[in-house]
Amino acid sequence: MTVIGIDVGGTTIKGAAVTSEGKMFKTFTVPVSKYEKGVEVMERLAQAVNDYIATYKDEIGTIEGIGMGIPGVIDSKKGVVCASANLPLWTDLKVKEIIEKLTGLPVKVSNDANAAALGEVRFGAGDNCETAIMLTLGTGVGCGVVLNGQLFEGNEGKGAELGHSTLILGGRKCGCGRKGCFEAYASASGLIYDTEQMIEKHPESKMKKIAIQFGKVNGRVAFKAAREYEDPWAIKVVDQYISYLGEGLLNICNIFRPNLIILSGGVANEGDYLIERVQEYIKERDYGYKNSPEVKVVQGKLGYDSGKIGAAALFF
Amino acid sequence: MTVIGIDVGGTTIKGAAVTSEGKMFKTFTVPVSKYEKGVEVMERLAQAVNDYIATYKDEIGTIEGIGMGIPGVIDSKKGVVCASANLPLWTDLKVKEIIEKLTGLPVKVSNDANAAALGEVRFGAGDNCETAIMLTLGTGVGCGVVLNGQLFEGNEGKGAELGHSTLILGGRKCGCGRKGCFEAYASASGLIYDTEQMIEKHPESKMKKIAIQFGKVNGRVAFKAAREYEDPWAIKVVDQYISYLGEGLLNICNIFRPNLIILSGGVANEGDYLIERVQEYIKERDYGYKNSPEVKVVQGKLGYDSGKIGAAALFF
Image 1 (cartoon, rainbow over the protein chains, first blue to last red):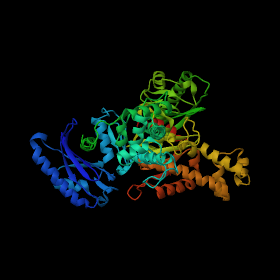
Image 2 (cartoon, rainbow over the protein chains, first blue to last red; image 1 turned 120 degrees about the vertical axis):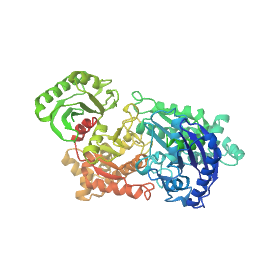
Image 3 (cartoon, chains in turn blue, cyan; image 1 turned 45 degrees about the horizontal axis):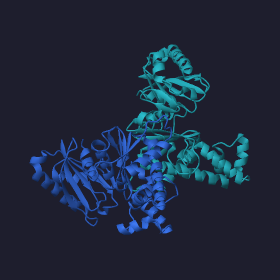
Image 4 (cartoon, each protein chain N blue to C red; image 1 turned 90 degrees about the horizontal axis):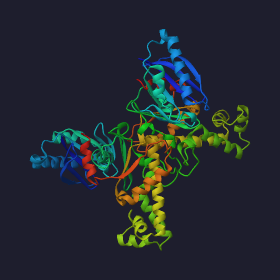
């Protein structure tokens, strides 16, 4: 079976044909802007899909559906975008209905983080294991939950928001309106905040020079200064970040006790330096660890392709 | 179908025949002590089950299995008690194997809170809804998770420990070894701690007199003083408790977005006074509440029978 997997981003929509064995073909892209009406984007997107299928039909074979991962609050049963912070003119957009009409193919829609998680679990770092959680450590903490091989999305597709569970109630302001969510500490944004605070307090830190080289403080500054220069202030920032992330993962261990936690997104690119330390952190502190199966922490393997492959996997 | 549902407590084991329509017959009990070896208890229990079936066979009909809810860390696939704080001599007890041998009936085992949740969802307050979480607000915060009509227990039955997710990291010491777990604030023990602290600070509070009447500070003191006497210090304690509980429920809404949250256990006996306020609390603060389906909060209906009925429901 081959379907088109589509990953909707804030500035670009990417799509590709993907087989049920996880093989991905050539990618096509459609630009998108937050100022454009959702229905207009749908028309351009459907056109691009139809053109792609026609152009590559010899190579990709028969296409049996279109899977889409979209950022925001998605009603996956109905295939409707309820609201999307990045695409404000997509509110109440009936994606499934519109794209099915314009392409003649069945359409399945899910939240982008959910789709990416499904992609990683089925065809990437998840090694097709039964129960896994993927966290995307970017601007926020995106999350996808796969239980018994299937996406768990909550009633009307509005659960699995693990980034919005409290780490420190009353703590840092979170984008969701509450204070102290896991996302406010373990996202790249949280890490950048901590890095900036430390640089302000300790301008002698190597982090300041690295930030100037990079042109800004980003999520890599503290890790680079800690790893390459053993800068004591950077080590403090990184240690603190590991503990925030580790405590959030301990919560996930207690709540889901998955086989696997997959980390992806910008911060996860720190690779083993991050993964090994956070794995050790939770191993040392895991509740009932003597009697509980270990939860393995790994880095995602598919990178940006997880969105397309996972969107296609909604059909598999 | 009729099976025997068994609810193992710290001092008494209770059992009864339960039909797949949720009808419960007469109860039998077997005393248990933490000083007694698990295998010896199993022998007495199997004898009691065999006697019960023989005595009431005309009334209860054919018995097709035995479901058991046991406090502690349970490997429900294997039917083994890995560890139980209340029954320390049950460690690594092969309950399923032993009871099957002694009764000739198939046995299913789960954690007691999980079983109770299944009972409430299938035959009590859950109204057989798809996805529901039950929290038992007692000495700890017990938890059972029912997703798509089935118990979700995590890998080797060691997940669904929602009481051990952080509310305030670094906060109050929790029995699990971490600090700031939801359980440390929203359990009856957490409420008692807050009540005691307030009485110490404000001995003029009506709560002190009520505690003397009760012979001790329990989970009812603050609620009684707030409701019946409008004691300002009691109102503070109750307001704080509602906010702790409410914030924990908001986490559950974001993580699972269930149809329903069922509250049971000692504190839940405060009934509407508690339920209505906590429902209002989460309604006002729910993330994406404009676009998300409301999560209803209700009180459990089965009381102490939920354990037996739920243990039986492991077969239904």
